[in-house]
Image (cartoon, rainbow, N blue to C red; front, side, top):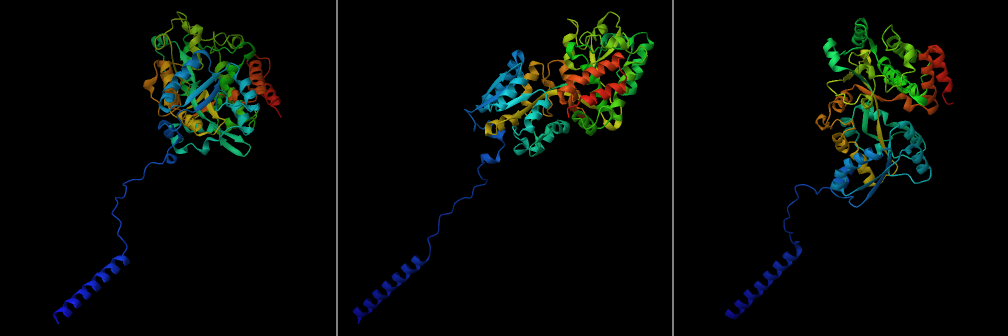
Length: 457
């Protein structure tokens, strides 16, 4: 009986073990707990091209560039790129040419375009945009970032018509300002004159100088085969101050004719200032025969013969040797005229455009949208940054710093209009007909009609 009992217990134990084994087989093995990552690893595709470049992704690549910088300017440009090249490992190979306009056309048409080209005249770039050779910046640049770092006018001026519609053809890197009026500071201060901040104040100052026995304005437009170009600069300044940006843009493309009331009015405002009795040194007859570089020199005589001269910041190279900025001369912003058009600034500058869409090229183009891309050149002298993230502390002289401040504070900016017009007009009939009008050879209506007649059909 006892043996049978132990046999039964053994059988029950075996059955229990079998049931336990079956239950274990039916229940899946629980995986060990793994800790969820707190954040996903950064994906380079979520970074901008510039950020990827700074992370070293494009190290060892080459980006070719072409432009008009030669000699000292080429050295300054290359030096300003050195920090970027060191941080990214991208080799920027720049080739400058004094015949850039001719050489870039040959290269593009021959299928040998550089990756990036620097255009000092947007009109030339527009021809390559029209033929479909230029990469659209809208495809990869952050437009919100651009709007935060540029006056909207710079972005507007970069928009050009391509074969499939409007594109952003490039980005602005180095610029210059033209809306400047120079004066002999020491004599000016001694005479008790005050800087005008409105057009009416400017005219009143001019009259005050005349009443004191001197000519107010130093004006000369003679420049050899290019005689007349300073007058076209004045016309552009006055168009920006007496009509809308839309009309200015239509004017430079030929949609708004020179004979329109808007353009004629701008010419009349210029005439009223230039031709007023005693306002211009030497009178109206001397304007067309005075070399533009010599025009401001009477300001520097022991007793100034004229006191005001409108010109871009390059004009200081024509000032007498030893003339000191802030002591012998200074400048102020050419005031606005109609308050509804604010305080515009006439500019020139360099727009960078891409002919290739490789990632490393996009990174370089994005870099050009930052003040850092021109910081080295600014500190070396000879460059103005249009970028809002630039610092006035970078400038090593008061002239460059003052010009930069005027440009950064402008309500709007527009490029030199004659440089945007077809060559037959901008550097042809516009120069000649304004010269003929100022000399008295033709009347204003005839001059404007002649320019319109020269516009390419």
